[in-house]
Image (cartoon, rainbow, N blue to C red):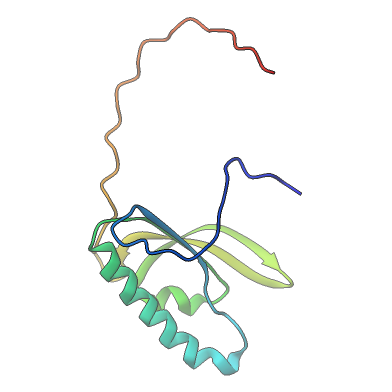
Length: 128
């Protein structure tokens, strides 16, 4: 198995007011549940807009196999990765922080780029 470059812990916690990244696998089951799923997508979009307004969301990522997810949330999404899972094409989506109908909420302002420091002579490091 591959190891991640950082430790990861999964659990439920109160995150309000703390820097938060959301990563979720949204429902995209059978066609019989499509109407229910569409309502969930709409609720999810409304919840994200409300939470983003509070300023602590750092990013939102969703795994989805339904094109209508992007439209139904009312949010602007960018596809970061597309892959097949058990014969179903799934997209890893990143919310841009904007509504799909134009300017909207944005995440915390990105840090301004700092000027590059002058090049330092290479230093040797010991690897144990």
